[in-house]
Length: 434
Image 1 (cartoon, rainbow, N blue to C red):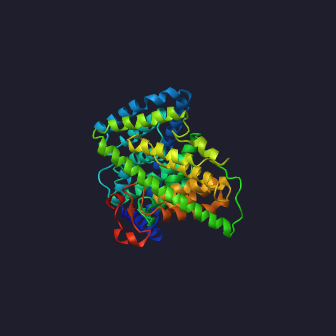
Image 2: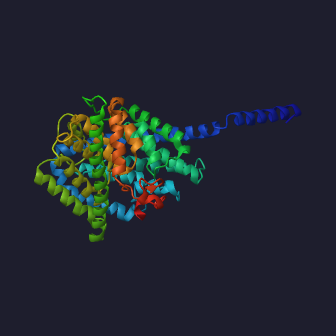
Image 3: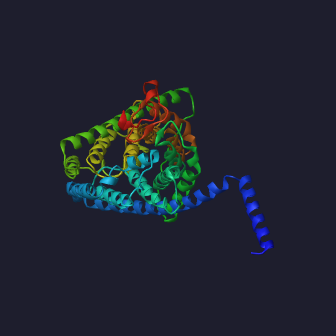
């Protein structure tokens, strides 16, 4: 290299250093934009495939109701798969949350195909489960494989997993803003990890765009009547929020209690979903309806159009708790949407607000109370139902969050800032420690 070339080389290095001193955020943005593009593309594609598979499984089951009789057999096969080959990924969403708090070994990629297969089988044979758990686990397992190629350290892996959860949630429900905030909120109650904001939003938006590019359609909801914001409607919204918070706390406690009963009474894990499958199948055939199994999207849509009976939310809660506690795979969130929307619709019997508005409030507020993510649920309500209902949605979510206490469907969720003085000394503890 000649003297002139060396001089030019030094000048180039100097100007590069000067440029990055002037714009210090650029290396961070560039790195995480590249990672977010990969996460968005991979997770969005996985969510699209999963949603299409789920729609096919649901339609086929509804056309061949006799398949529900095989739910115990399907449960046994799922139980065998996880008992012998998937114990290290059986914790599901709690494994993701645990790794955000304290990253250990890279999450095994097998989590993605295992939970995908388990969820499709659960829905195909008539279990009552959701889809968010599957989407988040698939996203986390896929994204964490990028840790080695990008040489991410422990703190960067935390950000990576938050971005993955944002992408999974945002793409599966078509709510990228809520997905990003959910990922930032869910692992630590009362605190948000701001250094993950850019990757979370970028990944969620890109994943949602990718899912849409695959021409996968999300369910659309509409609230026909929204009353003028006045004193009495606000009071009624608070009363509804109290009911939603109590419901959320009840669901969280019951699902953990039922799970512990299954584990204590049935020592051999593959037999648990057999027993749960027998209970669900017998109940379906005895009642003569499939209204309370699967995702329950038609009933959710119905809750926005007419006033539903009080028992709808209770029956869905029972079916879901038995299905998931026994060891079937899926998620809790879509059933929580069903429970909240039908409860809200039924509450219009006592609370003088439009049943469509109460259904929308319950849709997100029960979820807010059960996951302790009020900000994400407010955004989800606005994304799904429009900004006109925003204040009512916010009131219901905040009240439900406060009234649900320190309960959660995720046992590895930790308390960053306690909701009340009773738990102030427990900051940083997970719900499994309380």
